[in-house]
Amino acid sequence: MHLIMKKLFFLLLMVVAVMLTACHDDDSVSVGKVWVYYGYEVSRLDDGAYIIKSKEEYRQVMGTPMPGDWNIDFDKTALVIAKGTVNQGIRGIKAEGILGDDGEYIVNVTLTLNLTMPIETWGIAIVMPRSSSSDVTLNVSHVNASLPE
Image (cartoon, rainbow, N blue to C red; front, side):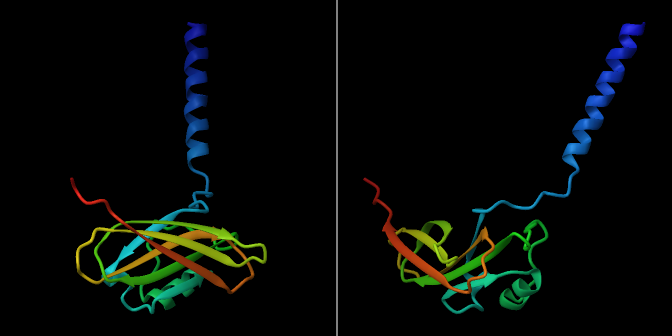
């Protein structure tokens, strides 16, 4: 009986430990996380890049509150939003961000185009380490999707 009580006590401690580690407040998204926007979601923006350093700045730039599941720690990170337009259909978007030696935000976006003819608007938001710089270099490259054989 004593052995069963020890096992139950140990099991109870494990459950409490798992619950405590799962309930911490540091659930912020990590650097490098990318969200993709299409069309109307970024239609109010001019083509280019925007540095967002608070939820209020996001609301001012985008015209809507930041999505609730975007738990961004603006004390440590910034959000860089980039928007553009292409004269072909978009099959996929990849983005990465780095900080330059002087703290400049550098965002590289690769658009995979599907060779259809609509003009499409695209946008990305990427979480980057916070910097005091207000400069963004946006590099956009286009890759044509292979045609079916």
